[in-house]
Picture 1 (cartoon, one colour):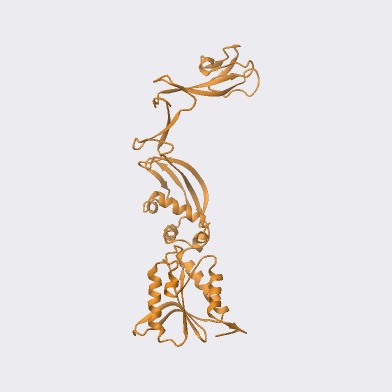
Picture 2 (cartoon, rainbow, N blue to C red; picture 1 turned 90 degrees about the vertical axis):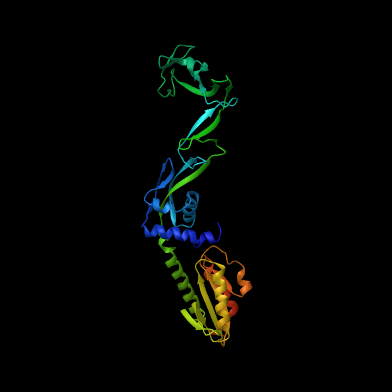
Length: 337
């Protein structure tokens, strides 16, 4: 599992979680119809997504602990219309006809006689052709022991169209919704799950996640003796005012920081532009941080281009922030310079 998978949610996962929370969804169940998978009680939410994308998002939320797996079914879907209303049929290996008969072979344990099942059938009962022992009704399970015990030891198929005999038929599927015929290689065979929502669903909501990041920053800055100001405003050389999500300050250093919720390059560029405009008015040296809480990694290595430190709010966030502060602030006997 990647580092991102153990931490925050992607924007798409976040959006789905918000919708589930808004609808007060506690669990996610499903049933199958001719048209596909129906998620009980959240049909309107599911209809906003491509079915495959919706299931992938649910699976990802499970991997990140937001949802807990409850149950699942393995389902064959039609590759043409995506309907799960599919039935299976056997066909001849030679002429492909579906008009085939299956013949089971029975062994009578008492006398050892083996023959086609049809040879044992007599007035809706099984009777051994060799020793004439009545083995019971054809509808009953064979007894496990005794003179009447027998077992089905194998089977073969015969094509009623071309007369071909074979042990294993071709397996075909037919969709009852659109009539498409397809084999197992062409089918869509997928796992469909039901889920329970966990306590993490509330913890990892966008509002709570960003607040946890701010709380971590406040604790770390306090340990470093950095004065912290949220939603701060600085005036630039252009006389325009610029908002920063937070500003940290020591005796010799100003830390300008924004929190990027979507992880887009524009957030980085905007922060760079604000820094350029305000830096000539600041007497202290400047360090710039973009805190990426998106989980999509789009800003990637662009931080080096703009001389902005990018720190992701994953499970290494506090460690990485402390390490970066250690490179820009020198600590001596509790004093910072």
